[in-house]
Length: 63
Image (cartoon, rainbow, N blue to C red; front, side, top):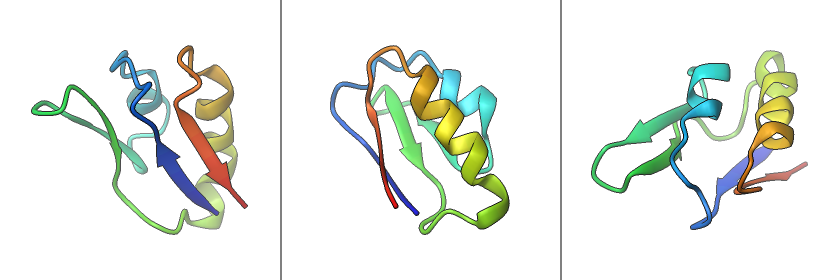
């Protein structure tokens, strides 16, 4: 699994709170970024949840 955060990210940090092992907030860009690539198997469900809950629909998952 690979994850991309688009420019539509609003920086609400929900994904960072839900799965800090994968997402981190970039203070300079004011949006979330990805810490690890590819996503470890044990975190895939959390990443899917973060994508589903993203209000801006800024998290794209490539299986």
